[in-house]
Length: 274
Length: 274
Image (cartoon, each protein chain N blue to C red):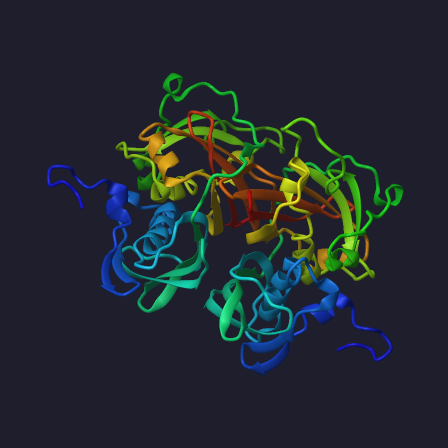
């Protein structure tokens, strides 16, 4: 798989799966992607997606992915089990789960599809922002370990950037992001990047409270070939929330190529403590 | 369950489940909610959610629901099977599927949760639009049967409303919607309403092509009590697309109470033919 002289990228290490049976693999969490507790959710989701991508019956490329974070993932070994629930001519529906000690700690459903040329139109607008080269990488001082695997250049809405005296400060962040060290973009890294936005509540109400993503859905608008053409360039993420209340908030985000192609839209619902 | 003198509402008939075993029910599609082919997806999703709500182990109320439309649902009988994948202290993760002839035709994952009072803030804005009483119900002439179960009053973005000469016509619809005949709002009817928006492609490019929702995710921002307080008033839906291309487009929507509470945000990815 890998040239002996090329070290495996930390993301590829984190999502690596060793087959144990048909549709079954063994993996382990990676210290490089450690979060406050357990691993970064983006790598958990990417690992589940990798179960689909490694499956011998795979048809097409990822179209949608919904990851449910069912319980805390413990540092250490896990098992991944994937199965195609339904295979159609040009699309396939998937169930995939991550188990630890025989219990499901995370699971996902996914749709893969063979895509083809059709009419195309992007309705969202690529925002006019400063290029990544004019901004500097955000400090990772005091941040969880996983953030050091990302170069993040905030156009606006940096994490706990400044105290906001008014209660309705917009939660929007616009941030250039890429893997660090550099790694060519693909579905795995894009799916992880879709969970790399800091929680919107920390932007709208800059106060640290326990949070945890409950469910994360990503729609992929690009083909693998389009992603490959982005290479190691940064992508632009634009994230905001709609509603916070009764212990949960949502987030919606777009991920753009530097050339202005909408690569993915992604949504999540997140628990917060108070 | 129902007073002998009160006829069962067509939606309750469509999503009705008769228990056959623990976590297993029998149901049947309803002619009242017939779509072009098979049943309206909103009732399929609501039926899957009903499997969760009827389950003896249910904890809390719906927080998120992702429905995958795996294959065409045939008119007639189906089986629903639900199981809690993981039960935590205050939340529960669900798998539920609809089977016909032993094959999965649709499935969903859901999260239910016990909600509690916390800090709350709505970041999206309730749009300034004419009240429903000043608009008239859209004609259902030539539309699929299910549309007659909804009162729909378009503020903008009616289905194939007018020919749009320019290619970038916005796909946004703003529409007051409610069940017809009247039915007090609850999670079942709200989940179905979240799939009642006409496909965005018909607004942005008014040309009839075959389409089909592939995956639909809804985040519920309100409690059952809040939904009940809406009663039989219409809710305001605001829907738009981000990207169309290579056979698929996405849609994001908000559903508001007439009093300006954000009840749900909902997203879907949809197949289109050309």
